[in-house]
Image 1: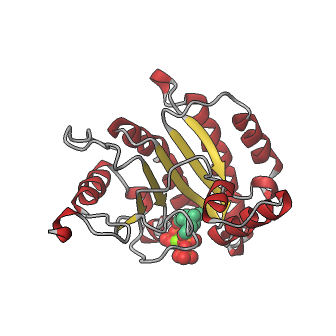
Image 2: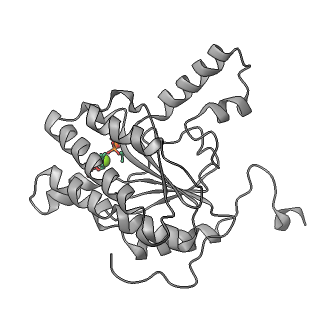
Length: 243
Ligand code: IPE
Ligand code: IPE
Ligand code: MG
């Protein structure tokens, strides 16, 4: 990922949490007459740079949609390739922990219990490690927003807790984290594809035509600068409306 982020692009308390629907790997490969798995390979290879870029601008939580509960519908060879890449890059990113300051906590959201054993073991190893929340990367693997809500509701029932917004929020995989301020989708499609449907109720959306393997610093700058132009009202009125 070439270049540096402009000094002016800094995340403040308005932009603590960013989530990304990393879409377009297949189309990236198709354009080059390559098998879809090559697109996934390139898409995974840029992850570390993307993480560094968001950390450097000061975002605290980055949530990446890597594999959805619906992605099992794809051909077995493609699913197997994605799982292998998930293992390879989860390990690599974690080993590196973004080098210098070791300031990265990797977490996972989704039902990881059905993932291949080797990957599950790696996840368990990472999750058992000490955490700090300087910079948290959530990897959504076998994640579905509907499944997550059902899971959270069942947990409340099992504990005999009332179904309230607060309790449900806390029972989500992201229970101890802020909701995403900004959700970016690459690949140009205007849809949510079952990603963070509870947490994204008031998120700002950015849809980019860039295909995920081409996602770079310029795209990040564009998203952040656009985010700061938005007026988030959360259903209320802002100062200008009141006068
Ligand atoms: C996103 O890229 C990666 C995963 C869903 C795992 P796609 O594989 O969906 O790429 P397109 O949308 O077909 O181009
Ligand atoms: C969303 O992309 C899932 C991930 C990026 C992991 P999809 O390619 O699966 O979404 P649809 O099928 O186009 O809605
Ligand atoms: Mg897609």
